[in-house]
Length: 288
Length: 256
Image (cartoon, rainbow over all chains, first blue to last red; front, side, top):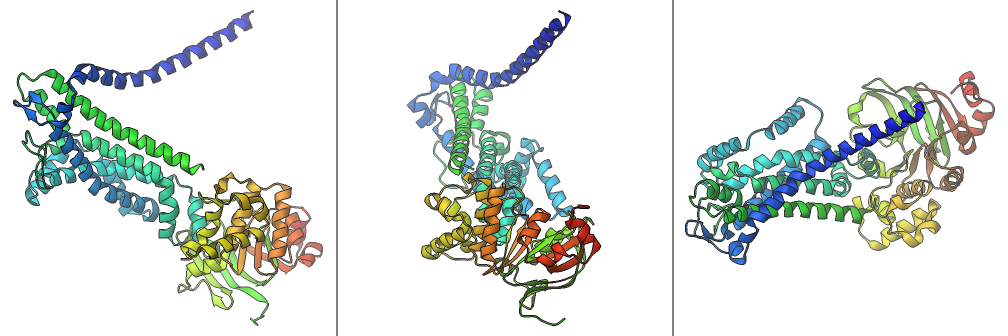
């Protein structure tokens, strides 16, 4: 009788424990769902063809946000152009070539610390280096370079992790078959790590696409009546546009604010989706 | 030392120490005859794998503290810094204890070594696939599914695929480091049968996974104990009438 009570009790405790854990895990889903639902409910009505393809009018209180969408696209592509080759190359160096010495350790510490720097500091740095010193001006180029520096640590650390996850035995076998280290990296290690590398790249770019502070002084423009036509032009961008219309424009219709937020979120989550699709496809194709 | 045309590999006064002091080899002198199976056996930590890895220079130079002596393959000292290691590794193939199938199809696993060497001709590659799979006694089992991933094969088939992969490069020497340690008796039998066939063309050096396997397969046998070569002779002599007490104790199961 007593035994049965205890076993029931233990069973109950276990169920209570698992129940609580499930609840906690479920709660992490809550914020993202809440944010998306709230923004859709507030801004969904603003989305129209004109909103997505038109220029802002009437001090941005009407019209569309097309230049900001295009601008964010340009900045993301520009950031990818600089940060992906550099980041992946650095990751390959660190994972495949770097000897374990003080220089390598310093590089690693630098990368970790780079990711801890507040984004506004990157903005100031970009202003000093790219805009003023190198005389790129407030431009897509300066902003992309600034965002690239900010993105690099994310790309490097995720790509390095993906490369390190490739079994050492693959490398040994490849070398034993007369391949050079470079052939081994190019034919075995990188293809094997590619899904992980792509995930890291997209995670990094996603963050770049959503940042305001680094582009504030380096490339973002309050309002432009036309699209930028060179990398030395300034550009509008979604996050900065959102910041402007939320704080700087009096009597702003809230639908436009939330509509802009909705587009930004869709942009970022869309990239996330692409990353997921690429990864699962690569996994399905490999079968091993 | 007098030269003997029948020796494929001559190891002279070879010593090696690792940085972490784990395994080492002390003053090894050994002549490995061509077209025969030479078995290198002994308890764990005796330096068998180390020696094998020296023969195709697969030891990570960063792990090696000191290395002395000479290893001659066809009168060429492969420890010479000027040695073309890539060429050496094509000449000296290796099969590892656990089958490591590269993440690609059965066919690509075999053609990989030829492709990194620069071979692009389809006909050559296909020819190598068929020839090496036949030599490794795997052809009949996989001929219909060469484009399936290599990992889809069973453990025994994977190990024979690894053997075929080495053979595709047409090496002169094949090193096998406990190639059957993870295999069932039937697969082990197939691998051993292949080796008996292969020794007609190749020089084979085998680290067996048991004394029984050593006795079964050895044309010549070398007994290694704690980094020293205790005894080397023809297989049937060493396993029936060992001249050293330690060899006798080990092959009769008194220790090890």
